[in-house]
Length: 344
Image (cartoon, rainbow, N blue to C red; front, top):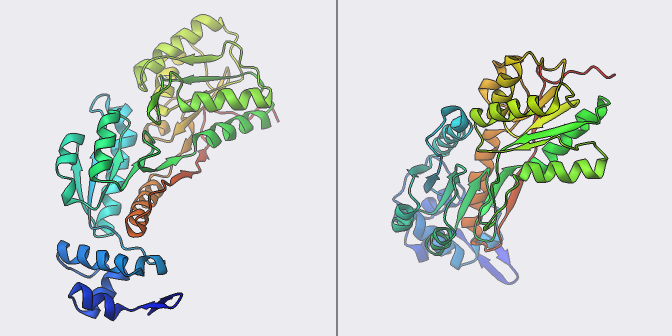
């Protein structure tokens, strides 16, 4: 029994109005994972409970059962896609453990056409989705969560690694070792809301924090091309040609795939990491353990991304909220051989 002011809502009342047994209603609203009911039954009970105010009076969150996954991973460079491919597998495992039915879509138009089959959706991948498609999707399926990206903050929720804090953490590591000349290596821009920016979010954070903290970054920012190994190798070759041996104390690299290419370019001409320059990267992909030297990189907890994404979607659906939530998760430095502590 629950009370709001002078109004008391009971499981019995919900069961009577919905037309189902009290036991079924109670088990469903309390998130019993062993309960097996038809989708129309589940939706009817949730609808009635919301009409009577149950969802507003309790902290119980009913996990959605029918969830679409909008999979917008570009099937190109396998190493470039490894991060999102792993995230896809983690999300699938998390959904299965919660007895959720996940249906994967690669075409947003098809998802829009079939929106009535789903309670909400979760999106993985960094491919650009047309703004008009995002608005059409919101019209038919207003509850959605983007994992690792945030292309439509006014329309959908998101769960992302806190990359601004990650860049600050990396700079703090450099400062703690007495490093002052620090550069940045990255790829071309990503989406910010409904706008395209030439700078990646990591570069924007780097530029902001280095100015505030007084780092010397003159001529040390290298940005070009997509996030892949080939771009990293070209940037590494450009750095070698420009620096003429006058390398900075360290480079912060936007992603492991770029760092792999940079290391290839450096190794080819005898630039030794970390003797000649230190590298700190982001993502902690499996390949980072096997480079020469192994990469020091910030790990993004993908299981926490998936878990928080599922919870955020469930909470939005249960509360029928229209205010969007954007959750930022911290990252953790995994120290390996590319960042040497030689200044202490």
